[in-house]
Image (cartoon, rainbow, N blue to C red; front, side):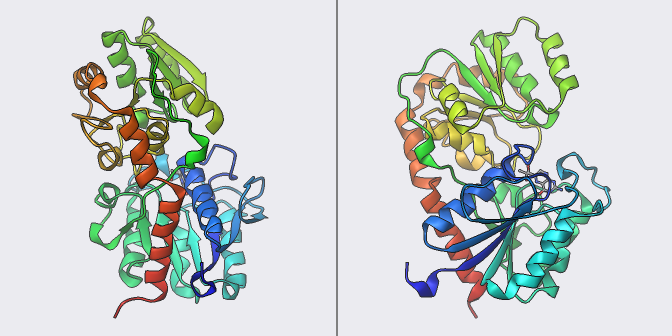
Length: 360
Ligand code: HBI
């Protein structure tokens, strides 16, 4: 990496929770992988994150303050909120003071403030939008920045961009996994897997209904975010062949899923990406997913998985019966080719290059 194209990068983490707490959901992985992959390519990466964060890579600066309430449970008309003292305001204030030391700022906040402050910064800001459209207020400020600062708003996938106003203004950046943490398994057992926050928008009830019909055992992994919902599922499907393994770290997660025959993904909302899909592929586990959101851009039907008519339990049962047509080697190979940290870093570098030296 020649010095001319190595960047001094300031990364601003999500403000919903400290990094490493698991409370931030998928965005914690987005931040960690961005920092790790860019540092490995020789860039100087400084990270601003809420106090209590843990991050093994980058130079971490922790700031105090109240976390942002999560946006994924908002209504369309939800107002912008920032509890005082706001950790988000603290991070943006700190970034404003040190911005001259950096070539570019990259943030992962699905929140109003970083977008609103963009015109007041001298150092360019790259915005990584980690969810689809949720509220009118966020749609407005995201699309305004994308119009006033073309090319600076990134998304996970094109299908996620299509939920936002003016879909063509956003740049798909995708995601990645640290492949060294996932071991390929070509001799699966009998189980299927389901992974994700146990919350209604993730649609676990459909996966349970499908395995109850198919009579195939299902391993369930993830944070138990909604206790009432979980109680309801157990009451509705008392005899389903399911086993809840809890919220596991990456080592535990991959050890649990690598010998599964397939991962089931049953999102009820437009999943911006679906990191669990590439974690499964990295282990050689094919993905059976509703044709909705990020997984539609990840799964290669008939090779690394099946895409099913959204909300069709029968469709899931039919796909489960056709798992043996899928190729576990091709699953691992797709993760290596498309979802490595190296490939992600190159997408970020190209993005930053295009922001810093816009074509006429
Ligand atoms: N909510 N307010 C807010 N800000 C975020 O950055 C945010 C969130 N909810 C969920 C979330 N980020 C991540 O879990 C997803 O983007 C993956």
